[in-house]
Image 1 (spheres, rainbow, N blue to C red):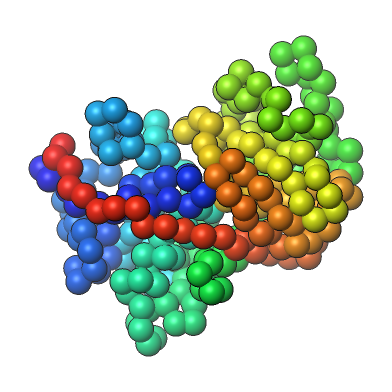
Image 2: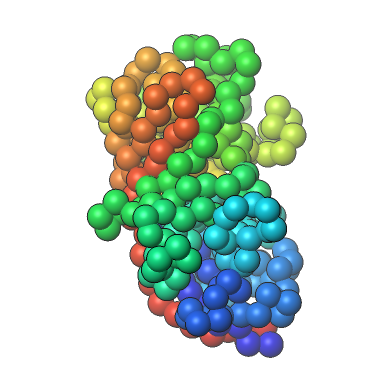
Length: 282
């Protein structure tokens, strides 16, 4: 079968998006014809034999009673399910703004997108997409100094932050020198994370800026992670190292993260880009 798709990216975190929401919008795929399976995801995401992507995004009609305009489902490059993706939901927001906008039916002034992590509110701020990412879930024992852990003989302070997906945040004085390709998979699959975890290493530059690198659960090293940027900013604020808003610089670009503290939503603002459209036969 042949499938139409859009290739999109947010700070180099790249996605293949399938549209089963609006037949008048580009690259429409009837909902019942899309084989949304781990094998399908692995074939599409393969960078040599497929399109190539960190994640697959599927926009479809929202569930009855959700109050959302659309539903976004996510498969990682390894075929596993992701509950939420920060850069991905900005890509979805751009698609809705560009092709489904206009009046109460579309994206003006905001749109609600249903995810496995609940309904998210998306709005446009100039050429950027702003997302209410919800209230972070923090480990009950999480304090300013984090939780001491030993991994591969190295001692770390661990900050566990949930942003729809689990994140393990670690501070370092040299984020570029971290052996992420070694530590990432070990931490992702560590027994302390029964559902696996995303792994974020953070270097504080100033009271308003951090550098970050990420190992994503189910995708490996990526150029950016929106939920990871949120988790890293939250951990940095909790540790007393920065103040909101936080400029999070990733290898693929910059996100702005705002958090007012315990019980408040995290807001993420950043770009999204449509790269190309295509058709693939599976």
